[in-house]
Length: 127
Image (cartoon, rainbow, N blue to C red; front, side, top):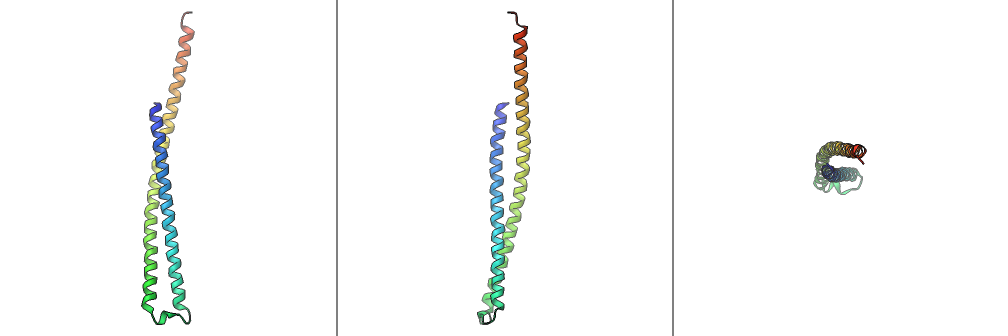
């Protein structure tokens, strides 16, 4: 039983690392979406500013704004996907942890029973 407990503990460690990876990727996508949103806002501000080159090159500004908003949407979709993966990894980690704790308790019960049987065997053995 101890072998199963060790394997489950290793599996739990791997699952926790995988969960951390997805959480990190999620945070990266959220940060990238926020940066793209900020870029779009800055372009809009410059577009509306007095004396800007926006009146000379409106297509360039509009294309830049559209690109920034597209990046924001794409990163938000990626963040949502990673959030789903975090949820799945969390559920798996919880299941593995429950199995590991149960294996640990079963192993402890088994050890206690063996110790009791040995103690009883020694007391009942003729000396």
